Image (cartoon, rainbow, N blue to C red):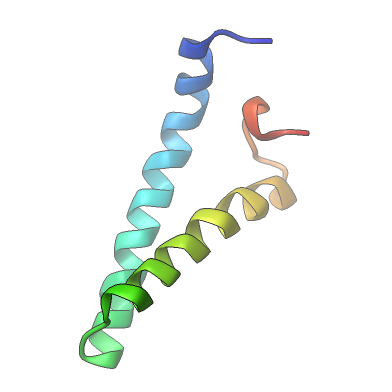
Length: 68
């Protein structure tokens, strides 16, 4: 098993992409709907947070820390 530093190095780019994807999705949803509530925003963020690792694994570009 790799060290914590190695795991962070592997995951940092994916965290950054996920963070940008969340902000982009929130901006698009806000523009389309004219304003999202807190609950709707939270649901959207959680959906991306759970879907992104699944999508990355499916595409075969997941870091070793996310592989099963």
